[in-house]
Image (spheres, rainbow, N blue to C red):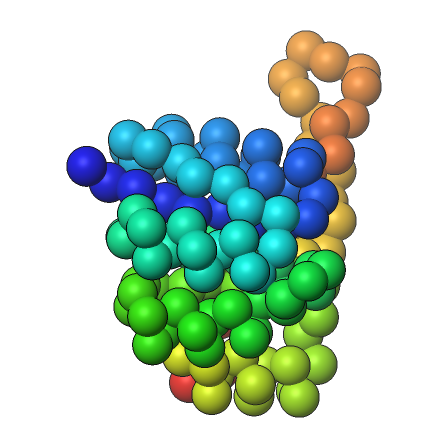
Length: 129
């Protein structure tokens, strides 16, 4: 069974990421709203992928990534707007596999529609960024 864990204190973000992962064939998507919950779920369910925000209450994503790396190793992708060099460095030290952040907003106009749809354009940076 392919299990993914989505961690964000914003329910809408969790929902959207979970929906995307489900479309990629994950059988079960677990959700947590902070790093502490993420560690507990990772240890209990051993997900094959974790997508996690950096800034959350109780325990941030970088601290959670460190703990998960020790207790239940899994690929972790950080999803956040914090792309400053200090955060990226700390994420790398915590064993984060990839870093994903909103690069720019773009507007897409649908065929046969006069109403533009807003879409978030994400940029992925591999380990060693």
